[in-house]
Length: 507
Image 1 (tube, helix red, strand yellow):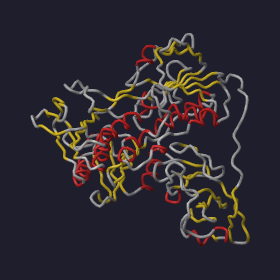
Image 2 (tube, one colour; image 1 turned 180 degrees about the vertical axis):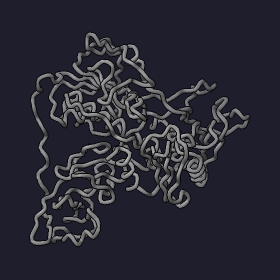
Image 3 (cartoon, helix red, strand yellow; image 1 turned 90 degrees about the vertical axis):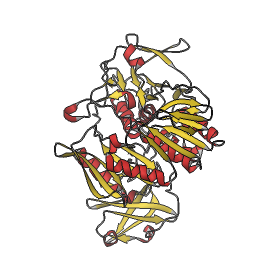
Image 4 (tube, rainbow, N blue to C red; image 1 turned 60 degrees about the horizontal axis):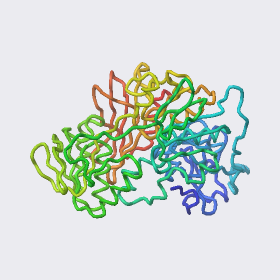
């Protein structure tokens, strides 16, 4: 997934470069031997780090510099140019740092610098001795990883109802489902990580109850587990519709690695598939099944795919893109019944279907929080520090409703990077940091060869302004409310997406 050690083009930095070699740019990609190295101009200094993002190998020189950090153009991970640390998800591994030697007007890079040491410390006054995380998804993993990265040495227990360790969930509907990504890419960390970092990861374990007064969680086996601080990161679960025949073995929803594996196994024998839902998950699943040469139909009650999120023009573009790859849309319809090898639509039309995937959205898992008496507002209501109405209980990810909307109104966003970064902020705050979560929501979605990146949060808008050409796959689509851009979707304009995120954040 990373390509920091791949042979690379650009100047040989061991032979030196001058500022003139940068031209008008602030970053210059080169190499030392076969390792890709990025030079960055920060004030009067030139700093050197690994040139590729450790998440999926994105070329950092095509990203942006902000103060002493660099952001990846692909998925917006952020790295320190001084220490290499991955400061913001979705990357967790640091990039290497390199020594820069200046001789006259030339800068030479010949060897790596020392890795930043792992912080180790005893718990300070008031720091928790025990932290429990409920949930093995993006937010839960990111919180656990950050707690240990910050040197907290207390007892850390993580409960996950899934059988597999935390995984790269976005890939489950994209390359992995399409057969283009091996399974070894999918876990966020190997099993050794949890042992080495002393994270007590309890898989296939359900938490039945939170006892806030006793500061315990009770698991399905009746055992009580004590905590000083608790993070609820239970995520969301797929919506299941009461469709006759929906309990048959060829019918699936997609949320976990086990779900994706099961769909892949069924797809190996399938020649026809029906996907219910024309949102991001439904369309990504459809594209992945079509890539496996399965005749795929998309059924949706909406007039256009993604219209409620991206608007009519971009929705029509996405539909045409999928149709070019052989997918067939049935809009304004639903599934009335599912038979062993077919489905009947609400219009009466019958479609062959060896495989059916229901992708009509998810709902947050709030039962534990509700039973524990926490305040809810479409999710677990938290403040800017991700604290719930109980100051010792935090929430992050799909279940958290945080003050990120207009005038501080609470919003809940089901985006992968949001969940990871909230997990990181919650971890810092459980250790007393008082760090407000202020990130602008961001997600990406793959539609065959086209990648759409979206920053901001627009539930409604007054107008849509298209900059560039959607048809030419070179555009920024602005969602405007009250004369102000509140979100932007881009195709082929990665740097503009990064810059728009910075503008929306008020930087």
